[in-house]
Structure formats: C-alpha cells, structure tokens
Image (cartoon, rainbow, N blue to C red; front, side, top):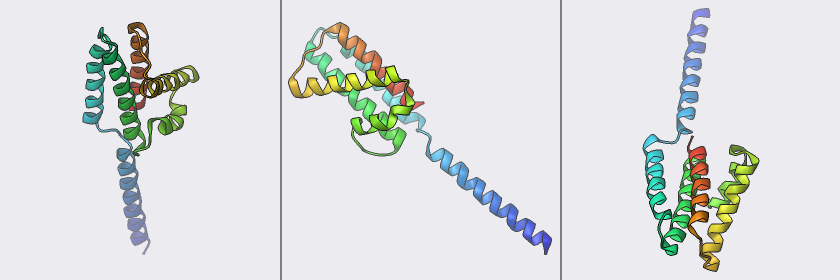
Length: 138
C-alpha cells in the first residue's frame, strides 16, 4: 500500500511539473515573431532618414504599430498601444516609460493634427521606440 501511494505522488508531481513547463513556455515570445518585428524596425530606420517629411511621419506611425505588436505578443492580447503601455509600466524605468508615452502622444498628434516632424526629432523618436520594442520583446 505505501508503494502505491508513493507512485501516485510521483505521478502527480510529474504531471504538475509538466503543467509548469507548459505554462512557462506559453509565456515566451516566439523567436521568429521577435525577428520579424526587429527586421521591420531596421527597415524603418531607413525611412526615418528620409528627406521627405511624409515618409518620416509614416515611419513614426509604423513604429507605434510595431510597439503595439510587441505588446500584443508580450501580453497575449489585442488591446490598443495605449492600454498596453499602461500595463507595461513595470517594464521600464520611470524616465524611459515617460519617453514612450511622449512618443506615443506625438504619434497621435501626427495622425490627428497633421503635425510635421524634422529629421533630428524623428531620429530621437526612432531610438525611443527601438528601446521600447527591444525591452518589450525580452
């Protein structure tokens, strides 16, 4: 009788371990999806350097979309970038977190108020989005 109990306990422990491993793996972001986002990020660096202000504006909108996709992978949802940015507060130090909010708000001004953006500002914005995407995908 004691050996049957021991075997049952071992089997239950192994099943529990299996569930723990499955849970941990479900939280990982697939490598290929990370690579695709990072490839698109690199492609946008070229567009940010454009002399055409519309190309720079378009790149910033696309950067915000990439950050949103990174959040979707991280949190397994389809919420807006702003909603997920609120959830991501613990991922970033305070200054970096505020910078992400600032560039997200800038993106909104570009879309809704037809705001222009010069090359230096576009380069700064790109670097902030790049940091946010890389941290999110870790």
